[in-house]
Length: 460
Length: 84
Image (cartoon, rainbow over all chains, first blue to last red; front, side, top):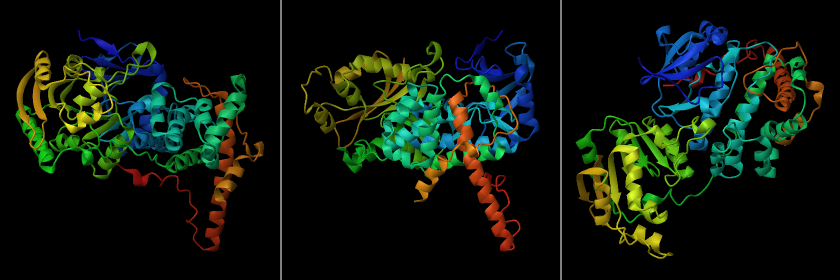
């Protein structure tokens, strides 16, 4: 008997849930979601959204796979390559996800349906495009009904985008503190006065939070007498679309953006490193996902992607992630998923029982990890002992390509320039000995024109 | 100037709020009382502006002898978003 495991994030909507049977992913539609699901299919909305690539497509499968007797249908959705979360997205990724949600809601209204929630967690990136993964987010539209998910949309999308745009791009991390959207009273206080000049932000954030405060204790029953014309819902969505589209891109200079141009690599050294990475890829022929740790603007992610490997580019600097995302979209490179992740503080498990949103490590292991020009930042920049680094890397991947940067290297010297050298164990021999406790060495080579060395390891 | 005008437009009082047929607003997520009320206000103003704009566009089209120029474009606005 194959074990059924309900997804730990799938408990809020009584109309259905997501679960796994073995390794297969299923979504059950409960009897109470019957009317809405049937309308989604019969109206042609599902076909339209799936054909446009806006909603994840699925197959209806036998009820033998059901989770409980409440099942009306069992769906088998197409899985996405890698599950990511809004706090791991750069500004443009969150903006594209917001515009997708509005586009879907407009289309749904055309088919007399409506989105009953607008959670950013319902969006995933598939081939670098945002896509709605929650097939049960639709309900039949009742004439005169306001958009139920308006508050959620403002907290999940508009508020964080406004903060990233007007205050600081790092405000995107607030989404990991406030999983049900950034509270408007909190966010509005951080926005500068000039945000009042934007009619959209004035209405959807500043006026909105005043209403929220004023009606905090108002009885909900009053709402049952309120209604709004469908035309007004379209107008509201149009206005949200235009407000979000006009948000200025956050401009923040980052030292990491110019990393490649300011390193001590000669053209020959960099080319040799690329050749070595190519040779190592040919040797192991990875059969799964690649994680590029500390990817910067994705120079080596592009190399693995060019080899046909789906690559998750993890980088702590939001400006670099933004640059890589926009470049990938422009160049139609769909094999790279750039995400914000600080390896000294990897994404933690969050939400109810710490199980709703998975940690970075739980979403692994990767078939191959690239750890290039990174170890000195972990060992010297963050004081992590080599043994702990090896143990962390072993939890992330099966194969590892890692570059060791000795103390004599100018980049390490820069890190040590203003502090005492307490890193007596940071040497190539110690590194090699430590790594061998958890990995077996396949091959290693010096990188031309540098004092650095590249290693290919396989986890024991 | 255009922005100031648009901002002032949001301060037009509740006269624009359209109160039509009652419809229950129940959902599995909390829509929030204040959020629903502000939505009614904003959407009503925007809806009125949208309707006025459409009226003038149609009227203008009549004088220009282009009967289809003011046609609702809500069905066409998604056509350019088809993915690869």
